[in-house]
View 1 (cartoon, rainbow, N blue to C red):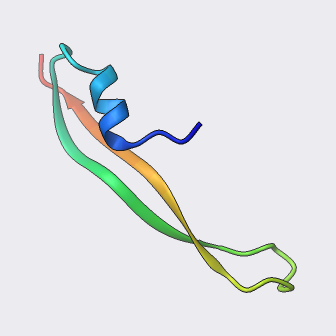
View 2 (cartoon, helix red, strand yellow):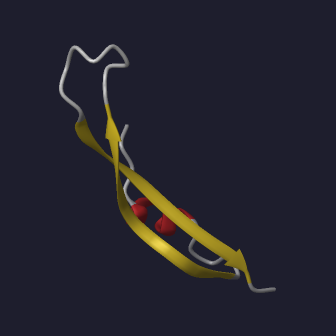
Length: 52
């Protein structure tokens, strides 16, 4: 199951948290053998800090 930053933030509703960053970040992936061209994978990133 692929989650979005909004999914994660929705699960954190009601917590005393400040959102530092939330969104998608790209990373380059390859097959490790050089046989397939590198491609972009998108990851969900959520960084929060407790405020209380």
